[in-house]
Length: 403
Image 1 (cartoon, rainbow, N blue to C red):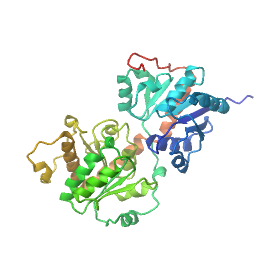
Image 2 (image 1 turned 90 degrees about the vertical axis):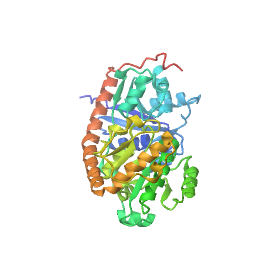
Image 3 (image 1 turned 45 degrees about the horizontal axis):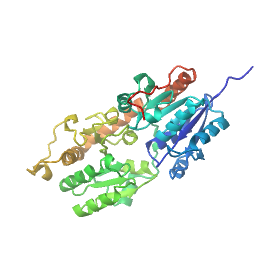
Image 4 (image 1 turned 120 degrees about the horizontal axis):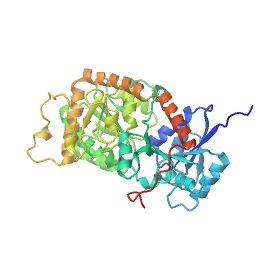
């Protein structure tokens, strides 16, 4: 009896650094079932490749980086032929750009995984898209992509991916924090859009009220020098600490009290899910995909993004006296106002540790119920079946998508 054909899925990624998309793909490839498909991966030549290997990814480096690369399409075509790919699953815009072109000239159908807010131009030649959140799907629709061509699939999590190797006490000792030191942690690229300027301003307010508190920031990026200078000028450099990129995130996440990432518009925010998995309440801006993860007042707190106070989801009243900055009679800029509200959200959780712990526990229960790998893999397998069965149509370019 002839054995059924085992579909062959080629994942294509073009990373610039180790971030959410790369972390997700590493975890996905560790869980793909050989009974249903054979998965392989190619990556552009990138400085992120070493980190992806350390995360357990196996892939072939391929010179497909850059959207104007004259050899990228031929190299990807050869890799797809060599592997015998039935389907291309692309991650990040450049990978999707070349997978769409390969499909256009007769290559395998392609599924574009949209991990952030990006131009629909990079995906317009692909058969179907996965959006990491409803916010990302709506953004694509606003840019002319038909709703039926986008499937929302939130990133899944598994406790096994967040296993700490050290005790919180050991981690705190390394950072110079005592057992009762209030610690606020942030895990993200050091850039303006991640809200670090508002965070360092908020830290000044919080540390006026709770001088013993510490802010731990993990990540690298172009804002590092500015943050160091701001913290030094404010006299908080000893308590606003930049630790750079760390691989042992699970250890540090378990050692903090509150996870705060005020990204202006996070596409999904895998770190919010990881914080919940570690039973830590999260504070985020009420924008992008964050409200799809954080239940305001239940698993964390949402504050408005800069220039968006009307989007603030109000919670229980804060009993703390108004902060010194808020007493200033001068009108606040939207960014300063956002920093003040961010500080008040942090203080709410620090003031009520019982509530904070309860939020963390509720968050863990919620993400384990909503973001499970078995459920995700079942849906992904079904989507592969639909594409290979010819059900989803190619995304037709519209005037809003035209280059």
